[in-house]
Length: 207
Ligand code: GRF
Image (cartoon, rainbow, N blue to C red; front, side):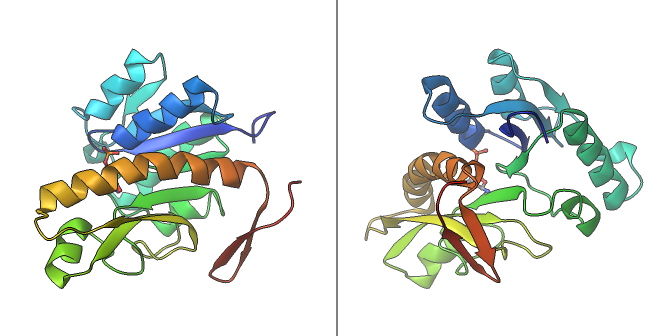
């Protein structure tokens, strides 16, 4: 852990708008943290460029250079540990992490998902929600465990589903909400007030 316990590592595979929203909250002074490293498994992920534009270290780690998923994940973990990151934030990381990775950062990996878990885990969550016919959806920030979108829930925010919604319009509404949710969840976790008992995450007095 770094001296002040506030270094973030961000893993992303694409656009990186959640990463940008976090970086922007840090810049504005709303979130007392730093992004120490951005890692992508895609060389052309726009999020890598967004990080470099902000002077943040950003690396592409090529899955094809590693024979197994576990070995790839250990390379990612090594990069994060070399920066001594305190929290690992998945922000559109389109790979399932191996137990080998998760064990290295116990209780210190967060993910954001564009639905109200446990409804609609996995891919195309917004489309799943629309097809199911729910009237409310939203986003979830949760701790990462070995399952897909199954870890203890830290924070959720809702959005309405409107009659005329398409997958695109609902996704855009949820994304806007995601940008307001992730940094708040990170702030709470960094505050040291989080207590995890089984599946329940509660917020005690500040340490
Ligand atoms: C977001 O919808 C996030 O919830 C999901 O992947 C998407 C990433 O978007 N896990 P971005 O790359 O942060 O713009």
